[in-house]
Image (cartoon, rainbow, N blue to C red; front, side, top):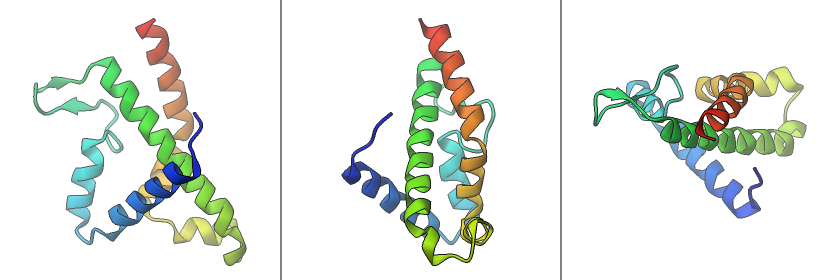
Length: 116
C-alpha cells in the first residue's frame, strides 16, 4: 500500500485534527465508529455486524494512518531523546493504532481470503 507525500500530509493533518479534540468521549466515539477501539465493528445503521468488505476497508484505512504515523515518527526522531521519549509523547490513540498494526495485517489477509 503506497501513499504519496501529499496523501501522507493529508493523513497527518487529519491526525492533528483528531488529536485536537479535547473531549476524549467525543474522540473515542469518532474513533470507535471507524472500528479502532472495537474488535467486532458494528454497523449502527443496520444494528448488525458490518460486512467483510466494509471491515476490510476500515482496516486498510487504519494501516494508512499507521504508515503516516510511522513516517512522521521517522522524520521527528531527531527531536526526541530516544524512541521511548517519542512513544511517550504520542497520544493513546496513536499508540493503540501502532500496537494493533500486526493484528490488522493478519485480519486483512484473512478477510481477503474469505472475499476471494
